[in-house]
Figure 1 (cartoon, rainbow, N blue to C red):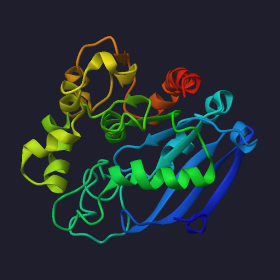
Figure 2 (figure 1 turned 180 degrees about the horizontal axis):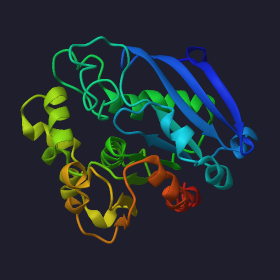
Figure 3 (figure 1 turned 120 degrees about the vertical axis):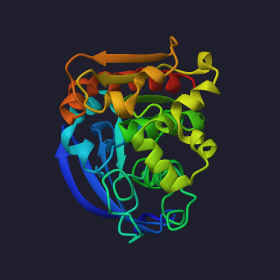
Figure 4 (figure 1 turned 60 degrees about the vertical axis):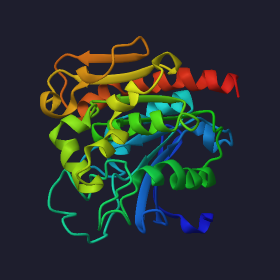
Amino acid sequence: MGARSLTTVESHRAFEGEVRRYRHRSDTLDCDMGFACFLPPQALAGQKVPVLYWLSGLTCDDTNFITKAGAQRKLAERGIMVVCPDTSPRGCNLPGEDDSYDFGSGAGFYLTATTEHYRDHYKMDTYVTQELPQLVAEIQPHNTNQVGILGHSMGGLGALNLFLKNRNQYHSVSAFAPICNPTNCPWGRRAFEGYLGPDEAAWEAYDPVCLLRQTNLDDLPPILVSQGTADPFLEEHLHDWALPKHANIDVRREPGYDHSYYFISTFIDQHIDHHWRILQAGAANP
């Protein structure tokens, strides 16, 4: 895949860096896709910088984080690039794709679908872990041992899953209000049945709680999870209490905060610093 496949949609100066949006044809998803990124001033000066992948939640696209989270100041200070993919394939015209907010368009769940209609397009995990990094490398060369992943809600679920299943690729992880145990909540069960079929055993491959049960938690770097106590989705869908209790899993309950980007923007600096500390250690041990 050559650089000519990327089209720059817009570019804006911010904190001596640049916010950019790109479009491209995705071979993995067989549709046109977009993603946003922030290049800190260190990257524009020619340095190799750490990269964070941000995965957004239900109904979102590639613009939500880059326009609402207020992360650019801290990213510029730390010299970290962030990349924000879309949340699903777009414009595939599949049956039921646009019927509800929690399945189909804007709700790809960062998995590989196996059901009829969806299996040819809905492969967001492969897109994020394989195709997108190739495009990012064309924009900004970086050290592969300084890559982290984070996200919100459905994207927090995706970040935890992709980190746990791709430990050689991602070296740090955090999540805001993630869907922690999707096999046991309405959002997850609806999506998994639609994308993966009725075999619930197959769903466990995309459930962080199930994956963590199969993981030596002592071998993990610190995992940061922030959850607002006033989140209206906490009791029915998010279930942070299902995560294992372990020193490497830091679940922070934030009193009075809800599910919105007001919550994310309040604590995003903590998350960026969390990744920076881990990725700096990776730079010292290439």
